[in-house]
Figure 1: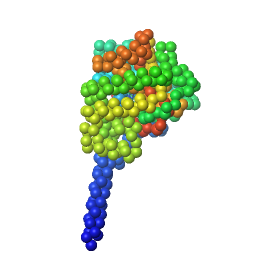
Figure 2 (figure 1 turned 30 degrees about the horizontal axis):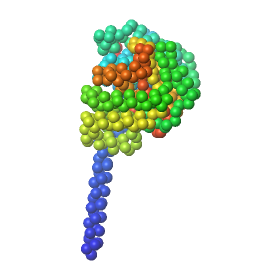
Figure 3 (figure 1 turned 30 degrees about the vertical axis):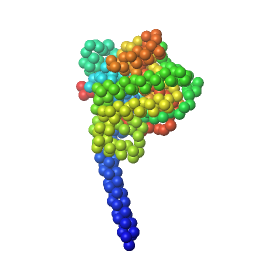
Length: 398
Ligand SMILES: Cc1cc2nc3c(=O)[nH]c(=O)nc-3n(C[C@H](O)[C@H](O)[C@H](O)COP(=O)(O)O)c2cc1C
Protein backbone atom coordinates (compact mmCIF):
# COMPACT_ATOMS: atom_id res chain seq x y z
CA UNK A 1 0.00 0.00 0.00
CA UNK A 2 2.77 2.40 1.09
CA UNK A 3 4.95 1.39 -1.91
CA UNK A 4 2.11 2.14 -4.30
CA UNK A 5 1.67 5.56 -2.75
CA UNK A 6 5.38 6.36 -3.22
CA UNK A 7 5.17 5.17 -6.84
CA UNK A 8 2.16 7.40 -7.48
CA UNK A 9 3.91 10.42 -5.95
CA UNK A 10 7.00 9.73 -8.07
CA UNK A 11 4.84 9.53 -11.17
CA UNK A 12 3.15 12.83 -10.36
CA UNK A 13 6.55 14.49 -9.76
CA UNK A 14 7.91 13.11 -13.05
CA UNK A 15 4.82 14.21 -14.98
CA UNK A 16 4.98 17.69 -13.45
CA UNK A 17 8.69 17.91 -14.23
CA UNK A 18 8.00 16.81 -17.82
CA UNK A 19 5.28 19.44 -18.16
CA UNK A 20 7.59 22.17 -16.81
CA UNK A 21 10.40 21.16 -19.21
CA UNK A 22 7.99 21.03 -22.15
CA UNK A 23 6.54 24.42 -21.23
CA UNK A 24 10.05 25.92 -20.92
CA UNK A 25 10.99 24.40 -24.29
CA UNK A 26 7.88 25.84 -25.96
CA UNK A 27 8.45 29.19 -24.26
CA UNK A 28 12.00 29.38 -25.68
CA UNK A 29 10.72 28.53 -29.16
CA UNK A 30 8.03 31.19 -28.90
CA UNK A 31 10.29 34.01 -27.76
CA UNK A 32 12.74 32.97 -30.47
CA UNK A 33 9.95 33.66 -32.98
CA UNK A 34 9.82 30.16 -34.45
CA UNK A 35 6.49 30.77 -36.19
CA UNK A 36 7.52 33.97 -37.96
CA UNK A 37 8.22 33.94 -41.70
CA UNK A 38 11.91 34.51 -42.36
CA UNK A 39 11.77 37.59 -44.60
CA UNK A 40 15.50 38.16 -44.10
CA UNK A 41 16.20 35.05 -46.20
CA UNK A 42 14.05 36.08 -49.19
CA UNK A 43 16.97 37.41 -51.28
CA UNK A 44 18.50 33.91 -51.30
CA UNK A 45 15.54 32.58 -53.29
CA UNK A 46 16.59 32.00 -56.91
CA UNK A 47 13.47 33.79 -58.17
CA UNK A 48 13.83 36.81 -55.89
CA UNK A 49 15.81 39.01 -58.31
CA UNK A 50 13.42 38.21 -61.14
CA UNK A 51 10.58 39.98 -59.30
CA UNK A 52 12.07 43.29 -60.49
CA UNK A 53 11.71 44.55 -64.06
CA UNK A 54 14.77 46.78 -64.08
CA UNK A 55 17.88 44.64 -64.79
CA UNK A 56 19.97 47.00 -62.66
CA UNK A 57 17.85 46.17 -59.60
CA UNK A 58 17.95 42.50 -60.54
CA UNK A 59 21.74 42.60 -60.53
CA UNK A 60 21.88 44.47 -57.24
CA UNK A 61 19.65 41.74 -55.77
CA UNK A 62 22.34 39.17 -56.64
CA UNK A 63 25.12 41.48 -55.49
CA UNK A 64 23.75 41.66 -51.97
CA UNK A 65 24.28 37.94 -51.51
CA UNK A 66 28.02 38.62 -51.41
CA UNK A 67 30.23 38.23 -48.35
CA UNK A 68 30.83 41.49 -46.51
CA UNK A 69 32.54 42.62 -43.33
CA UNK A 70 30.38 42.14 -40.21
CA UNK A 71 27.40 41.51 -42.54
CA UNK A 72 26.79 45.27 -42.57
CA UNK A 73 25.83 45.15 -46.26
CA UNK A 74 27.28 48.65 -46.78
CA UNK A 75 25.94 49.22 -50.27
CA UNK A 76 23.85 51.91 -51.96
CA UNK A 77 22.73 51.97 -55.58
CA UNK A 78 21.89 55.04 -57.68
CA UNK A 79 20.04 54.35 -60.90
CA UNK A 80 20.89 56.74 -63.73
CA UNK A 81 17.65 58.50 -64.62
CA UNK A 82 18.49 59.20 -68.24
CA UNK A 83 20.28 56.00 -69.25
CA UNK A 84 18.67 52.70 -68.22
CA UNK A 85 21.96 50.85 -68.84
CA UNK A 86 23.86 52.77 -66.18
CA UNK A 87 23.92 52.64 -62.39
CA UNK A 88 26.32 53.48 -59.58
CA UNK A 89 27.50 51.68 -56.45
CA UNK A 90 28.21 53.82 -53.37
CA UNK A 91 29.65 52.75 -50.02
CA UNK A 92 27.02 53.40 -47.35
CA UNK A 93 28.80 55.62 -44.83
CA UNK A 94 26.16 54.88 -42.17
CA UNK A 95 27.30 51.28 -42.19
CA UNK A 96 30.95 51.70 -41.28
CA UNK A 97 32.37 49.67 -38.42
CA UNK A 98 34.88 52.25 -37.25
CA UNK A 99 36.30 50.31 -34.30
CA UNK A 100 37.28 47.13 -36.11
CA UNK A 101 37.88 48.76 -39.50
CA UNK A 102 39.15 52.28 -38.73
CA UNK A 103 40.39 52.97 -42.29
CA UNK A 104 37.30 51.44 -43.92
CA UNK A 105 39.54 49.00 -45.76
CA UNK A 106 37.26 46.01 -45.20
CA UNK A 107 34.39 48.27 -46.20
CA UNK A 108 36.07 48.77 -49.60
CA UNK A 109 36.80 45.05 -49.95
CA UNK A 110 33.07 44.57 -49.37
CA UNK A 111 32.31 46.84 -52.34
CA UNK A 112 34.33 44.55 -54.57
CA UNK A 113 32.60 41.39 -53.34
CA UNK A 114 29.26 42.93 -54.38
CA UNK A 115 30.52 43.88 -57.86
CA UNK A 116 31.80 40.37 -58.60
CA UNK A 117 28.50 38.72 -57.62
CA UNK A 118 26.73 41.12 -59.98
CA UNK A 119 29.11 40.25 -62.79
CA UNK A 120 28.57 36.51 -62.43
CA UNK A 121 24.78 36.93 -62.27
CA UNK A 122 24.93 39.31 -65.25
CA UNK A 123 26.49 36.63 -67.44
CA UNK A 124 23.72 34.22 -66.55
CA UNK A 125 20.81 36.63 -67.11
CA UNK A 126 22.33 38.13 -70.24
CA UNK A 127 24.24 41.31 -69.40
CA UNK A 128 27.86 42.28 -69.67
CA UNK A 129 28.72 44.53 -66.72
CA UNK A 130 31.44 47.07 -67.53
CA UNK A 131 32.77 48.39 -64.26
CA UNK A 132 34.74 51.59 -63.88
CA UNK A 133 36.07 52.20 -60.39
CA UNK A 134 35.87 55.63 -58.74
CA UNK A 135 34.54 57.32 -61.91
CA UNK A 136 34.26 60.71 -60.14
CA UNK A 137 37.76 60.50 -58.69
CA UNK A 138 39.32 59.38 -55.43
CA UNK A 139 37.85 59.90 -51.96
CA UNK A 140 38.99 62.83 -49.88
CA UNK A 141 40.45 60.73 -47.07
CA UNK A 142 40.11 63.57 -44.57
CA UNK A 143 36.35 63.66 -45.15
CA UNK A 144 35.81 60.01 -45.74
CA UNK A 145 32.16 59.60 -44.90
CA UNK A 146 31.13 62.69 -46.92
CA UNK A 147 33.21 61.36 -49.80
CA UNK A 148 31.46 58.01 -49.60
CA UNK A 149 28.11 59.76 -49.81
CA UNK A 150 29.06 61.84 -52.83
CA UNK A 151 31.54 59.79 -54.86
CA UNK A 152 30.57 56.42 -56.28
CA UNK A 153 32.83 53.41 -55.84
CA UNK A 154 31.82 52.17 -59.28
CA UNK A 155 29.91 53.07 -62.38
CA UNK A 156 28.33 50.01 -63.95
CA UNK A 157 27.28 50.01 -67.58
CA UNK A 158 25.23 47.12 -68.86
CA UNK A 159 25.53 45.65 -72.33
CA UNK A 160 22.99 43.14 -73.55
CA UNK A 161 24.60 39.81 -74.47
CA UNK A 162 21.81 37.27 -74.03
CA UNK A 163 21.88 34.61 -71.30
CA UNK A 164 25.02 32.49 -71.13
CA UNK A 165 26.15 29.42 -69.26
CA UNK A 166 27.72 30.52 -66.01
CA UNK A 167 29.31 27.64 -64.09
CA UNK A 168 29.64 29.78 -60.97
CA UNK A 169 26.04 31.04 -60.96
CA UNK A 170 24.62 28.37 -58.65
CA UNK A 171 27.42 29.01 -56.13
CA UNK A 172 25.95 32.52 -55.64
CA UNK A 173 23.20 30.98 -53.54
CA UNK A 174 25.50 29.00 -51.23
CA UNK A 175 26.37 30.69 -47.89
CA UNK A 176 29.64 32.56 -48.39
CA UNK A 177 31.28 31.79 -45.06
CA UNK A 178 31.61 28.40 -43.39
CA UNK A 179 32.93 28.70 -39.83
CA UNK A 180 32.60 24.97 -39.15
CA UNK A 181 35.33 22.32 -39.16
CA UNK A 182 37.15 21.37 -42.36
CA UNK A 183 38.63 17.95 -43.19
CA UNK A 184 42.38 17.46 -42.91
CA UNK A 185 42.81 16.90 -46.69
CA UNK A 186 45.20 19.32 -48.31
CA UNK A 187 44.18 21.08 -51.52
CA UNK A 188 45.18 19.21 -54.68
CA UNK A 189 47.63 20.75 -57.13
CA UNK A 190 44.73 21.30 -59.54
CA UNK A 191 42.67 23.11 -56.89
CA UNK A 192 45.62 25.24 -55.83
CA UNK A 193 46.39 26.09 -59.45
CA UNK A 194 42.80 27.05 -60.14
CA UNK A 195 42.54 29.32 -57.10
CA UNK A 196 45.94 30.96 -57.57
CA UNK A 197 45.08 31.64 -61.21
CA UNK A 198 42.55 34.19 -59.96
CA UNK A 199 45.54 36.48 -59.36
CA UNK A 200 45.81 39.67 -61.40
CA UNK A 201 48.90 41.78 -62.10
CA UNK A 202 48.48 43.89 -58.95
CA UNK A 203 46.46 41.46 -56.79
CA UNK A 204 47.92 38.08 -55.86
CA UNK A 205 46.15 34.98 -54.56
CA UNK A 206 48.40 32.47 -52.83
CA UNK A 207 47.66 29.18 -51.08
CA UNK A 208 49.68 28.23 -47.97
CA UNK A 209 49.50 24.64 -46.85
CA UNK A 210 53.00 23.63 -45.74
CA UNK A 211 52.93 22.51 -42.13
CA UNK A 212 55.15 25.41 -41.05
CA UNK A 213 52.97 28.02 -42.74
CA UNK A 214 49.72 26.56 -41.42
CA UNK A 215 51.18 26.46 -37.89
CA UNK A 216 52.43 30.05 -38.15
CA UNK A 217 49.15 31.35 -39.56
CA UNK A 218 47.17 29.42 -36.94
CA UNK A 219 49.31 31.20 -34.38
CA UNK A 220 48.57 34.63 -35.89
CA UNK A 221 44.86 33.80 -36.03
CA UNK A 222 44.78 32.71 -32.39
CA UNK A 223 46.92 35.51 -30.99
CA UNK A 224 44.92 38.13 -32.88
CA UNK A 225 41.61 36.63 -31.69
CA UNK A 226 42.87 36.84 -28.12
CA UNK A 227 43.86 40.49 -28.63
CA UNK A 228 40.49 41.32 -30.21
CA UNK A 229 38.57 39.53 -27.49
CA UNK A 230 40.17 41.92 -24.99
CA UNK A 231 39.36 45.15 -26.83
CA UNK A 232 36.04 46.11 -25.36
CA UNK A 233 35.02 48.75 -27.91
CA UNK A 234 35.59 46.31 -30.80
CA UNK A 235 33.67 43.53 -29.07
CA UNK A 236 30.87 45.94 -28.15
CA UNK A 237 30.61 47.03 -31.78
CA UNK A 238 29.97 43.40 -32.80
CA UNK A 239 27.61 42.74 -29.89
CA UNK A 240 25.51 45.77 -30.88
CA UNK A 241 24.70 44.20 -34.26
CA UNK A 242 23.90 40.75 -32.91
CA UNK A 243 20.28 39.83 -33.65
CA UNK A 244 19.00 37.60 -30.92
CA UNK A 245 15.76 36.28 -32.42
CA UNK A 246 13.50 36.17 -35.48
CA UNK A 247 11.80 39.47 -34.58
CA UNK A 248 15.13 41.28 -34.63
CA UNK A 249 16.39 39.42 -37.70
CA UNK A 250 13.31 40.47 -39.69
CA UNK A 251 13.58 44.01 -38.38
CA UNK A 252 17.27 44.66 -39.16
CA UNK A 253 18.23 42.03 -41.76
CA UNK A 254 21.96 42.77 -41.30
CA UNK A 255 24.56 42.00 -38.66
CA UNK A 256 25.26 38.72 -36.90
CA UNK A 257 23.02 35.89 -35.72
CA UNK A 258 23.47 32.40 -34.30
CA UNK A 259 23.36 30.87 -37.81
CA UNK A 260 26.73 32.52 -38.47
CA UNK A 261 28.30 30.01 -36.09
CA UNK A 262 26.80 27.16 -38.10
CA UNK A 263 23.88 26.54 -35.74
CA UNK A 264 20.88 25.15 -37.59
CA UNK A 265 17.44 23.54 -37.13
CA UNK A 266 15.70 23.59 -33.79
CA UNK A 267 18.96 24.49 -32.02
CA UNK A 268 18.71 27.96 -33.61
CA UNK A 269 15.48 28.57 -31.75
CA UNK A 270 16.57 27.11 -28.44
CA UNK A 271 19.71 29.23 -28.50
CA UNK A 272 17.83 32.32 -29.65
CA UNK A 273 15.26 31.80 -26.91
CA UNK A 274 18.03 31.57 -24.32
CA UNK A 275 19.95 34.59 -25.65
CA UNK A 276 16.72 36.61 -25.73
CA UNK A 277 16.06 35.73 -22.09
CA UNK A 278 19.68 36.11 -20.99
CA UNK A 279 21.40 38.69 -23.26
CA UNK A 280 24.55 38.42 -21.14
CA UNK A 281 25.13 35.00 -22.77
CA UNK A 282 26.25 36.90 -25.85
CA UNK A 283 27.99 39.96 -24.52
CA UNK A 284 30.91 40.92 -22.32
CA UNK A 285 33.15 38.12 -21.09
CA UNK A 286 30.89 35.38 -22.46
CA UNK A 287 31.13 36.82 -26.00
CA UNK A 288 34.92 37.23 -25.72
CA UNK A 289 35.36 33.64 -24.51
CA UNK A 290 33.10 32.31 -27.24
CA UNK A 291 35.05 34.20 -29.90
CA UNK A 292 38.40 32.78 -28.74
CA UNK A 293 36.91 29.28 -28.42
CA UNK A 294 35.40 29.35 -31.90
CA UNK A 295 38.64 30.66 -33.42
CA UNK A 296 40.47 27.79 -31.71
CA UNK A 297 37.99 25.31 -33.19
CA UNK A 298 38.49 26.91 -36.62
CA UNK A 299 42.27 26.77 -36.58
CA UNK A 300 42.22 23.21 -35.22
CA UNK A 301 40.50 22.10 -38.41
CA UNK A 302 42.25 24.20 -41.05
CA UNK A 303 44.28 22.34 -43.66
CA UNK A 304 45.21 25.44 -45.67
CA UNK A 305 45.10 29.21 -45.85
CA UNK A 306 44.78 31.63 -48.74
CA UNK A 307 45.99 35.21 -48.82
CA UNK A 308 44.97 38.00 -51.12
CA UNK A 309 47.65 40.68 -51.34
CA UNK A 310 47.97 43.94 -53.22
CA UNK A 311 51.13 45.81 -54.15
CA UNK A 312 49.71 49.06 -52.82
CA UNK A 313 46.86 49.82 -50.46
CA UNK A 314 44.89 52.26 -52.64
CA UNK A 315 41.10 52.22 -52.51
CA UNK A 316 40.99 50.70 -56.01
CA UNK A 317 43.24 47.87 -54.87
CA UNK A 318 41.03 47.20 -51.86
CA UNK A 319 37.95 47.03 -54.08
CA UNK A 320 39.78 44.75 -56.55
CA UNK A 321 40.70 42.44 -53.65
CA UNK A 322 37.00 42.12 -52.91
CA UNK A 323 36.23 41.29 -56.54
CA UNK A 324 38.84 38.55 -56.36
CA UNK A 325 37.68 37.36 -52.95
CA UNK A 326 34.16 36.82 -54.32
CA UNK A 327 35.55 34.92 -57.32
CA UNK A 328 37.58 32.87 -54.87
CA UNK A 329 34.48 32.03 -52.82
CA UNK A 330 32.54 31.00 -55.92
CA UNK A 331 35.42 29.01 -57.39
CA UNK A 332 36.04 27.31 -54.03
CA UNK A 333 32.33 26.41 -53.78
CA UNK A 334 32.48 25.00 -57.30
CA UNK A 335 35.44 22.83 -56.23
CA UNK A 336 33.61 21.56 -53.11
CA UNK A 337 35.66 23.74 -50.76
CA UNK A 338 34.55 26.25 -48.14
CA UNK A 339 36.19 29.40 -46.82
CA UNK A 340 36.23 31.63 -43.75
CA UNK A 341 38.22 34.86 -43.47
CA UNK A 342 40.18 35.26 -40.24
CA UNK A 343 40.77 38.99 -40.49
CA UNK A 344 41.84 39.99 -36.99
CA UNK A 345 45.63 40.15 -37.57
CA UNK A 346 44.99 42.38 -40.60
CA UNK A 347 42.95 44.95 -38.69
CA UNK A 348 44.39 48.39 -38.24
CA UNK A 349 43.39 49.44 -34.70
CA UNK A 350 46.28 50.26 -32.34
CA UNK A 351 46.08 47.15 -30.11
CA UNK A 352 46.61 44.92 -33.18
CA UNK A 353 49.65 46.80 -34.49
CA UNK A 354 52.26 44.28 -33.33
CA UNK A 355 50.53 41.30 -34.94
CA UNK A 356 49.66 43.35 -38.05
CA UNK A 357 53.34 44.22 -38.45
CA UNK A 358 54.37 40.64 -37.71
CA UNK A 359 52.20 39.00 -40.35
CA UNK A 360 53.22 41.63 -42.90
CA UNK A 361 56.90 41.14 -42.06
CA UNK A 362 56.54 37.35 -42.49
CA UNK A 363 54.32 37.28 -45.59
CA UNK A 364 54.48 40.67 -47.30
CA UNK A 365 58.05 41.81 -46.80
CA UNK A 366 58.06 43.61 -50.17
CA UNK A 367 55.70 46.24 -48.77
CA UNK A 368 52.49 44.67 -50.12
CA UNK A 369 49.29 44.76 -48.09
CA UNK A 370 47.55 41.55 -47.05
CA UNK A 371 43.90 42.30 -47.80
CA UNK A 372 42.40 38.93 -46.87
CA UNK A 373 43.57 35.97 -44.78
CA UNK A 374 41.21 33.07 -45.33
CA UNK A 375 41.08 29.48 -44.11
CA UNK A 376 40.05 27.01 -46.76
CA UNK A 377 39.22 23.30 -46.88
CA UNK A 378 36.64 20.64 -47.50
CA UNK A 379 33.83 21.36 -45.04
CA UNK A 380 32.43 18.69 -42.72
CA UNK A 381 28.98 20.25 -42.94
CA UNK A 382 26.94 22.83 -44.83
CA UNK A 383 25.93 25.97 -42.99
CA UNK A 384 22.70 27.98 -43.11
CA UNK A 385 22.26 31.21 -45.08
CA UNK A 386 22.49 34.46 -43.15
CA UNK A 387 20.42 37.66 -43.16
CA UNK A 388 20.14 39.92 -46.17
CA UNK A 389 18.28 43.21 -46.62
CA UNK A 390 15.62 43.80 -49.22
CA UNK A 391 17.26 45.12 -52.39
CA UNK A 392 14.87 48.06 -52.56
CA UNK A 393 16.46 49.37 -49.35
CA UNK A 394 19.71 49.80 -51.28
CA UNK A 395 18.24 52.04 -53.96
CA UNK A 396 18.93 55.75 -53.40
CA UNK A 397 15.85 57.90 -53.70
CA UNK A 398 17.45 60.81 -55.59
C1 LIG B 1 36.43 42.01 -45.66
C2 LIG B 1 35.78 40.85 -44.93
C3 LIG B 1 36.27 40.45 -43.71
C4 LIG B 1 35.69 39.39 -43.03
N1 LIG B 1 36.25 38.95 -41.85
C5 LIG B 1 35.73 37.87 -41.22
C6 LIG B 1 36.34 37.34 -40.04
O1 LIG B 1 37.34 37.84 -39.55
N2 LIG B 1 35.80 36.23 -39.48
C7 LIG B 1 34.69 35.62 -40.01
O2 LIG B 1 34.25 34.63 -39.45
N3 LIG B 1 34.08 36.11 -41.12
C8 LIG B 1 34.58 37.21 -41.73
N4 LIG B 1 33.99 37.68 -42.88
C9 LIG B 1 32.76 37.06 -43.37
C10 LIG B 1 31.54 37.92 -43.04
O3 LIG B 1 31.34 37.96 -41.65
C11 LIG B 1 30.33 37.33 -43.77
O4 LIG B 1 30.54 37.47 -45.14
C12 LIG B 1 29.03 38.01 -43.39
O5 LIG B 1 28.75 37.83 -42.02
C13 LIG B 1 27.85 37.47 -44.19
O6 LIG B 1 27.71 36.08 -44.00
P1 LIG B 1 27.86 35.05 -45.21
O7 LIG B 1 29.21 35.30 -45.81
O8 LIG B 1 27.79 33.70 -44.62
O9 LIG B 1 26.78 35.32 -46.18
C14 LIG B 1 34.57 38.73 -43.58
C15 LIG B 1 34.08 39.13 -44.84
C16 LIG B 1 34.67 40.18 -45.52
C17 LIG B 1 34.17 40.58 -46.88
